Length: 447
Image (cartoon, rainbow, N blue to C red; front, side, top):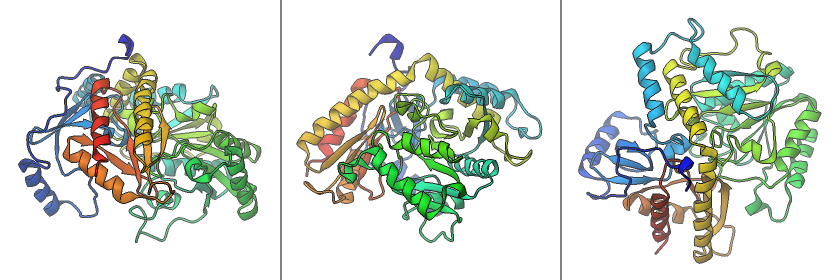
């Protein structure tokens, strides 16, 4: 690792350390309190409670130190409690915590929008608007596209995940746990085939895109489509990387028919894949791009950025929200973006990806149940199947994840079929710690 790419320093020892059983006594006490106070509908992954985190570790209330391979689901890309984020947050909290940007605006909101306009793909004039969550960003992107085009239909894809609000549940493909019992859902949402190379067979990206656009023509009519919404690499759906040519073909179809092309970069954005945004890999310039997760170092903030003519099509007062672009979250985002730029985190993500990809491919050669290794940069995954088949094996994935948790590694799953183990380490993780975490993952496959 070069000096310019050294992980951000932290006072926490960067080590895996187990001092109690998992969960420990204090975590068990807190879990009992959680059961009595928190809705049973809120899910959970590890049965431990965090006390501190930084670099590549999370320390629980019992003193156990876990290697973090999840980053709070791609949120703490710059490392937990990154010093640049902490300093800006402390300064902003001491100045003021809220005024509502729509009532008394403040510079931080404007500065974040300027950064988004500068960093997102394309050199055309852009505008941005800030919100609280990825689902809000997606919902507002759809509103903007409908206002601009005067059309209603929205096209999404198999295996997509776009959020948990009513509209974004309709946009999301997976029923459990996201949609079950929550309908009816918003209308005028149409789902198309997604390029999924592991399961598509030999079909090239443009070929799958042609299937999708043909269905759009026949089932919806291009002149009725307001937006095509797609994740450049699917997140919750299984870290699916579409075959080359699929996304450019969709973007070209959208441009030819006056359709707003929206890239949902909520999980892929902000250096995660080795570029600032995953769309850059195939030189795609979305009309609109939605962001959240890694943008603000752990604070809730989301954005929609895009062509100025599209973003300005909404009537005054049509976009906003009481907390959208909260000043403390904006301060955190400015600190996180500073860290990404000054520490060259796109390059660091590529380094992490080399370690992840090399090790996971090596594991796949020895572990028959690993059917596919995929991803880009520090966003990698393995799909687990019954050996020699495409049959999903979610039981093995859960067994492996549980074993990792017991051995001090944060491992998280995803996938339409629940059979994908995903890797999203903070970019501040040390190489040796990452390798140790992968050792634990590999050992967890043992019967």
